[in-house]
Amino acid sequence: MTAQALAGALADDVRRRVFAAIVLGGADAPAVVDRTGLPARQVLTAIRRLVDAGLVTGGDGDLRVDADRLREAARTPSAPRPADDPTDRVLRTFVRGETLTGLPAQRGRRRVVLAHLARSFEPGVRYPEREVDEVLRRWCEGGGSDHVTLRRYLIDEQLLARERGVYWRVGG
Image (cartoon, rainbow, N blue to C red; front, side):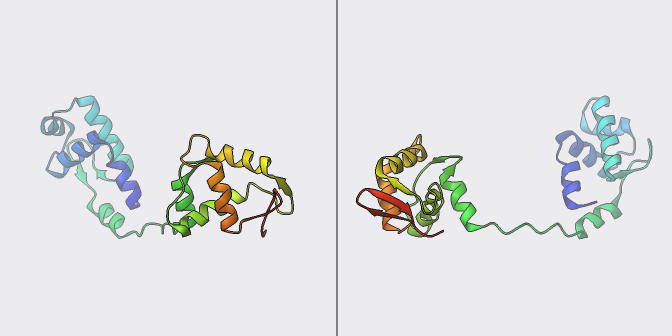
């Protein structure tokens, strides 16, 4: 049993109350019903699920917590969580689907968001200003930024280049 399985088995309020009643000496279903004040049907269902999960052993009249399984769950290391990528965290904060919800004030974070927006433009393709504005307006719909500000930042950060009203993506 893993710690996650243990937490899942005890996530339900009824199962937790039944488990506590068994820990405190409720050796059979009627004793657990008395201690919890729950309907017998809920108690019986919870006992069955706790037995299936391996937290409780024994039959009616001999219910007890499987302490060895609990110790095992406590000693079992959980799977390591993948490191949260800072770039993904920034994008989750400021981008929802195809909408820019806001523009970060911090330059490093703003650059991450702008680099994401710059991918809307194909490298090597030349875009007239109205086309660039159209693409950036779609990002701004329902968000907290305007397309002119985005265009200026994209140029300032050298993610887009501009010459005589024609724009293109810089880099790959």
